[in-house]
Image (cartoon, rainbow, N blue to C red; front, top):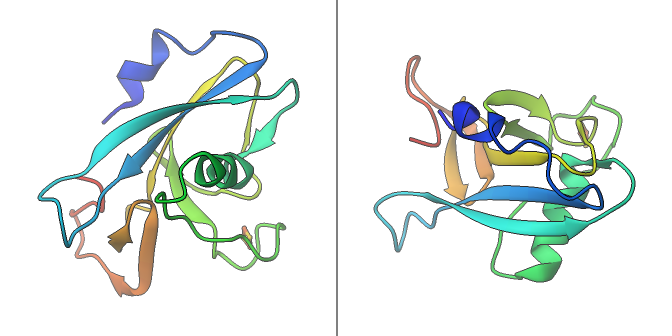
Length: 128
Ligand code: FES
């Protein structure tokens, strides 16, 4: 959905990673939106590290805390640039932009946090 929007500006400042995070509070809002943050980094960072930095910048942003960091437990599942991925093992290079949304197969609790006990019906995506 947002992938085409990212292609035109994938390379920006080499010491910065642009992170667009999905924000949605189902108790207060009818629809989600993207919010942009810039994270200073000269080295690649995992999507989970980027989400933690966004949380440091804005404590109201909700994301899970990764636990295994090995791509095994699945607690870090999110959608990055339109693909469902393990956030702990997916790296973003300095100068790139990443859009992080809830994993497409589960109901959104808030922001990028999903309820793994509530899978969505086939054909329905979390961030619509
Ligand atoms: S933290 Fe366990 S799979 Fe990513």
